[in-house]
Image (cartoon, rainbow, N blue to C red; front, top):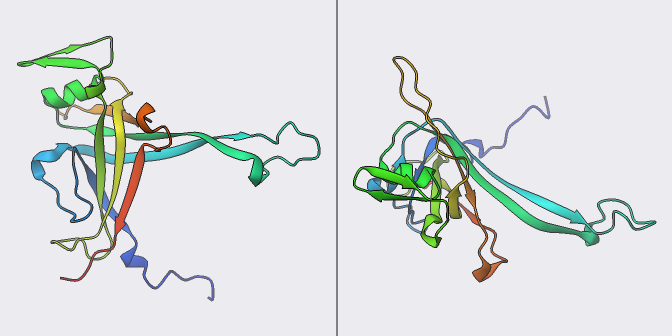
Length: 191
């Protein structure tokens, strides 16, 4: 069958496994520090970057809807969500969005501070070469991320606790044109 085929480089372009969420990542080298992995997850993660558009031609006579010259992006909503199965004070503080830690006590705040917004990374294995120093990866940097999904715990008899999370990337007044995410894709190389 002529059209029942797959690309010849299929296995070089597949993202594998659930990936990790980390506080830092070096996309130039692919280096990850295990202590910068923020949490263990269950069920994988979901990233989305959804633009909102304005169609300046929608109410103009004789201009068809969705005319490319009159369509503009208003903003892009950037989100990373999933379910964590690990928790510590730093992660609880992050999930609460605005909170302070003193010893083993995490106290929520009703106001946001600049330091509540932090960059986070989702990094996943990519391509048929995904081990060692030349491993392939897809990495997404969510900039100025803030937990907007609240602090949630779901426990069950004879099961692990689940902590659903949702982070939203935020624009900054310092550079309003910078969309709050970046994507890096590196094909693995044979060692």
